Amino acid sequence: MSDQVPVTVLTGYLGAGKTTLLNRILSEQHGQKFAVIVNEFGEIGIDNDLIVGADEEVFEMNNGCICCTVRGDLIRILEGLMKRRGKFDAIIVETTGLADPAPVAQTFFVDQDVQDRARLDAIVTVADAKWLSDRLKDAPEAKNQIAFADVIILNKVDLVTEGELREVEARIRGINPYAKLHRTTRCQVPLDAVMGRNAFDLDRILEIEPEFLTVDDHDHDHHGHDHGHDHHGHGLKTYHDEEMQSVSIRHDGEVDPNLFMPWINELVQKEGPSILRSKGILAFKGESKRFVFQGVHMILDGDLQREWRPDEKRESKVVFIGRHLKEDELRKGFLSCVA
Image 1 (cartoon, rainbow, N blue to C red):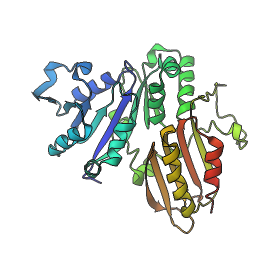
Image 2 (image 1 turned 90 degrees about the vertical axis):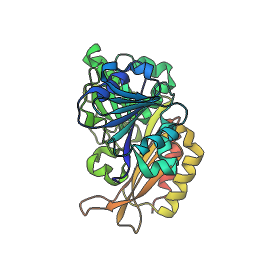
Image 3 (image 1 turned 90 degrees about the horizontal axis):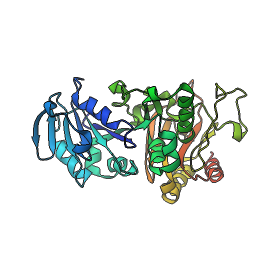
């Protein structure tokens, strides 16, 4: 693992505050060296006083970070960066203006050379507290970015009332209940909230993010297994986004890997374009270890992890976030894999 450089994919709508965050990373004395890959330098407007040296497309900053542009091929840039290996602790790829962070995320699953030397750490989305609700109405990209996120930085919270803030958070939760959410002003968030999340490191994810698959289940009420108390507090409106939603399915027991593996593979091949993220923790019949998987569209990554602990309930749970998900089919399909 230690040979692989962690990669954070940073996304967010124009004006949400990504630039502010990037400028902090490139200028603060945080004692770490990051390589930042951006679309356009112009958009960042790097302060010339902070630049130590620049050669064609790579800028070196006085805090040790380096910055380069994606011109064309991300894989080529990553390979160039890898030659400077040892010079930095992590890579940040900014996806300004790209409708969808998926292709960038998929690069880290698909290309073997990249996979050997870099690993996806987390997808981080910066959202504008004031304008996000409007964007969710008119911009499918904004929804994609929320749906994909492992970490959401809800920025500019100083510009909205507490009521508006709760409402925008409810909208976010209607699309993606699983991301870690931070409220910020001027993207002031500790860097370790953004970097080193290990959101895709399946070996460690459950140790450091026990809530990987837990959620203040806003989907209980309409599946008839409500726990009999109000999850919503404040009498909040819960949003079920018509187009984008999350479906979580749990079985209090084991599934048969010989049924589950073909089912999930066929499912993502067929429905992959509409499934943005998928994840799960499963108890396989006859297997003492937990099976954990993560997916981005049609690409799945999963393996057996640590042993089930004696105090844990051997249960199986999967989560899908996507567009127009066929909830009944998903439920029926998953439950037909029960051991």
